[in-house]
Image (tube, rainbow, N blue to C red; front, side, top):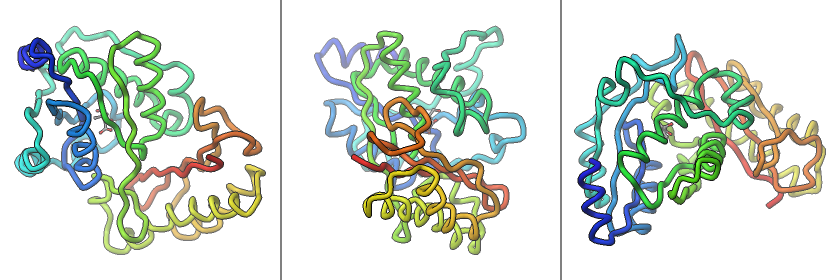
Length: 271
Ligand code: PAF
């Protein structure tokens, strides 16, 4: 992979990169299409990264379809797919991790301790191996995007980070590989997540700026339809600091459970 990248760089080509955990859906295809526009060479990685899963999470059953992934990647014009195995990414003595100490706290980091250290570390490693000029990520994983932007700035990594808006089903459900876990009944109820965040957006557009009121508006739609709200919070969209009032660009972020499936989504407010 490194030899391919160095050869492309030596030819003066700009490398665009989409890191993934595979089981590609239309959201990933959108990332690949955007990345295709960003450089002369398009690389993707497919690696289900064990260090970003906690004990008892879905690492063992995470959906996989490498043949389908490679077909979809080829159809979007990807030039190379990097598909390492776990042993080649993490040697037996690996002990170095990258952490965004503040941004990794709370939200998904609160529910999934160690998750963002796993994400930042593997993305750092992938950047060192793929050596992209630009890397493209989905905005559905809003906290992940913030952590990765921080990592690149703090560690002087010469990689541009590009966020791409979430791709949704017709009923608003954000595309996610984990949607494949949902039963038909859970799938129907899952639409409440985006509907609730949209209700908060509408309340804000109508003039409401109080965080508690906006969260209540979202919760009134989400809570009756899901099995559990993991978190539902309003944060500064740049720093992810908690907000009690929307007096600057903000984002409402949520994670919910339907059965054992955990889904996340977010909605920007005030920008
Ligand atoms: O968003 C994902 O699919 C993963 O967190 C990533 C960025 C590929 C790192 O494993």
